Length: 145
Picture 1 (cartoon, rainbow, N blue to C red):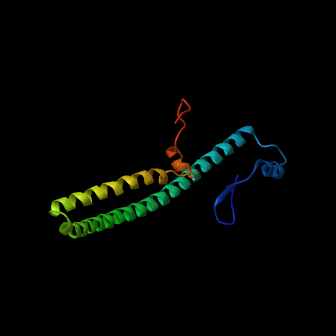
Picture 2 (picture 1 turned 90 degrees about the vertical axis):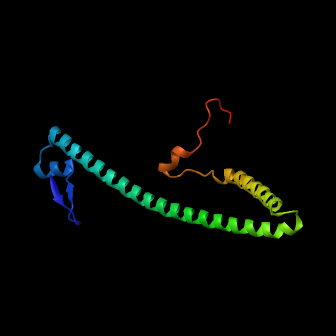
Picture 3 (picture 1 turned 90 degrees about the horizontal axis):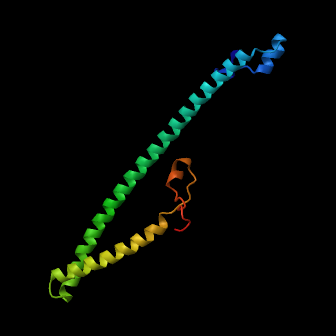
C-alpha cells in the first residue's frame, strides 16, 4: 500500500505495518508483488544515479580535454618560437643556419625522450573510481612483469 511521505513522493508500507493494521498476515503474493515493485523502483533509481554520474564525468572530461588541447597548442607555439630563437642565436657560431637547426633539433629530441621516460612513471595512478578500474594493470598470467 502506498502513502505520500513528507517530500510528496510515494513510499511502500512494510509488511509488518500491514499486518498490524489488519490483524492478519499479508499474502505471499502481495509480498512478492511489493518486492517486484521495490526492485523496479530501485533499478530505476540506480539508472538515474548512473546517468547523473556519467553526465558529471562527461562534463569534467570535456573541460579537461579543452584545457589539454589549449595547453598543447600553447606549448607547441612556445616550442616553435624558442626553436627559432635558438637557431638565430647559434647561427653566428656555426657555419650556417642549417647546422644550427640540426643542433636545436637534436636537443629537442633529447628533451622529448627524457619527457617520455618521465611520463611513463607519472602515468601510473591508483584507480579508486569504479569507472577507471579497468585501466589498472592486470597481473600477467605467468606472474612476471
